Length: 78
Image 1 (cartoon, helix red, strand yellow):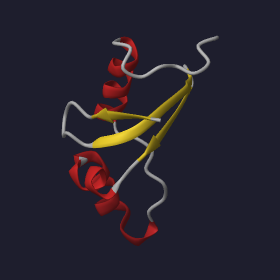
Image 2: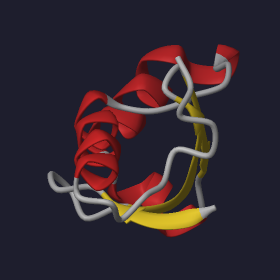
Image 3: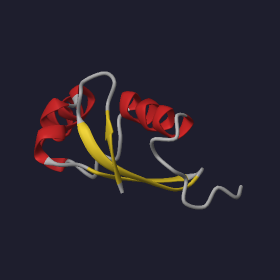
């Protein structure tokens, strides 16, 4: 896993791109607090919240990290 910082809110997570179709994201407490979309999803879900995988801005930041070579795709075969 490698650190990736969201370009929108500055949340820093650990990400792993196993393939073009599979991404793992590990959130820490600071990143969870910074992410506007995550906070809003948790507010709306209340006590019935499920897993929050990734917000749109972080997904774009991960794709940019792959494009610039900062985050490698482990199995790039499509």
